[in-house]
Length: 469
Image 1: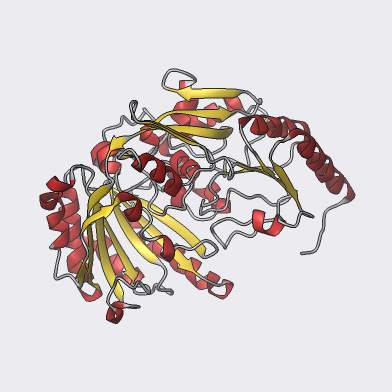
Image 2: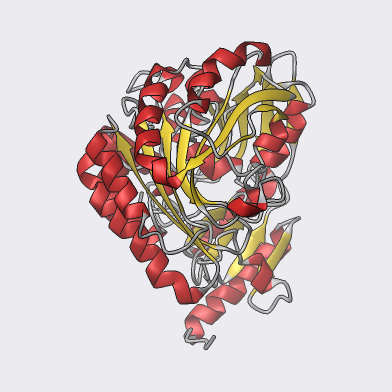
């Protein structure tokens, strides 16, 4: 890569790096560091950005020092937690990455049914610790997902109809605000910050730890995991819609249009074939699950039904191999108030043009505990939706970038008439697309979120880190 920086910008970078190295306990990685190219990479291989420096914080005190240096030198800033965030906001070009990825502390309090986890923790790491006590909270469906970005964006997961979104399970956060102050935000302390952190996304400061409610679940859970023939997709999808709307809150049904990978647990003759998959976890006593999950297992004639008891940590990591680090990903979404026959037919027509077998289209069912939170209780703006449509383009090489991204964008546009106008922040395309979707992501909370951000960041230090929105 050619270096087009001028003398002044190079001098500023050198000054920032020197001050970081003299102030932090953690490692500082600049463009000349031998680990630079690895350190600037994130899970999504589509993101290829070149920051001036990466401040790999060892703890909250390091974060305070980095924020002080940001205030002094005013570089562009991004914040990296687990490094999974799809849109790419974790890394900035020619700026400073505040990297929490080595902050991995997890402390479970089984008596209080809570867990405190630092900002670099992933869901796989958190689940491993909480499951030692038979406890869980709503988390990501790929274990490599970081808890930070996932939760700040809302957090749709397999337990959400029983326990709410990930952000609904927050008890408190510890955050370094742009003035360099370490604050605890909860329903009692800085409730405005706490409101914004629950679904409002980034740009409030650097969240160094999260405290979640935990619920008795596991270590084994009952699941529905069924593959149906692709040629029956229209019938299965309609039956799924009806079953999902009648499902108890302990079940958060999902339907996907995908292709079978090279999974040794799936018969060889199905490898590579398009299928409809239906999945759910029963968020309750496994012995009571059969009746609740049965409707999802009888939507048609299954190709394969692997439903049964599985360790919760295995369920939460079961699709990891299909989404490897370094693959290329682009995701879009719509919230839907209803899943009409016309919407299903349009979704299937779009899926037939899916350019890569790794890509998929997913319907997630909301309602239950998600809808029982008052609209003004948190920043998450889409409580009334019954479904979320996720269009997940996945592929392995840059030669397919245009086709894969084009398919996702075209599908999103064709499904737009069936949307209620809302878009899920965590599946909103690439970071530079977010400005045009601000009102769709934030909905009626847009004005209040902007006021809270201004109140804590009057000088706009973290404006770029907010990802607009």
